[in-house]
Length: 256
Image (cartoon, rainbow, N blue to C red; front, side):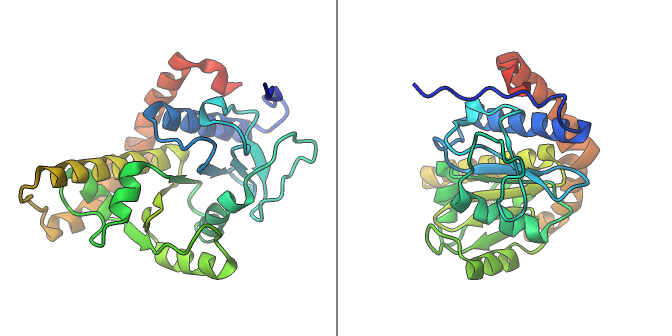
């Protein structure tokens, strides 16, 4: 059985980097707790404040094996900063993240998942519909990117960046979901909203009944409200301490 190298970086990195590591490891554990992980695939990346360096999961580790210390520090091109690091990253998996981080410097975290619900809704021609409050949050800042295959080349990166624009939510056609946030907590809340919106839409569609659509004017007005409720000190950061406590209760090893 493969033994995971045990690292302890707590007193070897800056306080800002360590807090980012703890928050990002907690986010990986939360995704596993929700059942939203995909074996060793998909990624959550976060910029270390006041640097151009990013943190991402080691390729080959399950999300419930991620700790603050075994996250890998890389540059925007995916080069590992610490040459003594015993882990590798998935270069193909990082391509989408690098494309987003290149153009969204104000956002700390990029979260990309392959949940059944986001893939299903991303694969519908009409995409996400205004059927719930969760969908209204997402539709207030939604974008789409067409599927171009597994490898994301330089030309596709440009198209993805153009499609993303200023949106905080993206459905990757036939592929999954992507969210951004100014903090890790914000990106997590955005993915929570997007996933719940997709789940609810599929459940409504399964009834075969005619749904009630939320009026476009209400969706248009949701963005300002969402910025208050689900972002910043009254949103992602208000709920994030509770999420951290939840992860600590289940397995505090994530913060090592």
